[in-house]
Image (cartoon, rainbow, N blue to C red):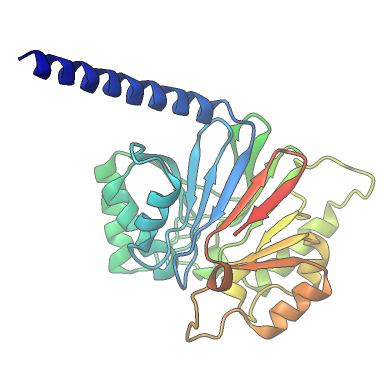
Length: 297
């Protein structure tokens, strides 16, 4: 009996140590000052996980299948089963299907999208799961601003209108993530026609003497290269206005489409962007303290 009490005492002390460790870990996570953006290695598709300095979490797209759950499990604490916001850029399966799996496994506070339904059974399941999850549901368009944390916001640049039956790529959710003096252009599968449209808007509102990073301007430190590096995107004129220091490409290893396209890679190199690719580098981890950006893979 005495031996049992001694063992019970040690088990209790170990339990307390674990609880204290979890509490301090949570406090540490909430007190950080860095933004972390993960470009997840989910194969031929897109998935970007954003963790704000205050702990808020945003998942933009989910890739083509359940691989997203493995990726989230590698970067989120085992006890964290909630995500603040899901954003669907457009309802193609290589962006949508993984979000369906996330909605089954995680409690989600809000879901944002353009409203284009794509007329697919997968999109119908997505809508059903949003309701079952109890998440708030919003359609976003140009001018929407999400204040995620202090000095951190996501400005929605596209779409201009919320249309149910517009062309899926023409109804793309495109945003610029800004943290302090650093910025990220998040393009989904935006093609050259929308790139040109953003450039036209940029020219109309361009103020060369302004150093305000919080407007709708498209110049960004990091460019999430559109459409997995397809030749239908990432035009020279768009790259000239964005002028990224870093370019990240989400594409599957040896994918059947030949993404990323060599012409796109050549253009990125021409503009001096340092290129990171999930098909070669795996998970891409980007950190910003509001002044500087560091990329690891």
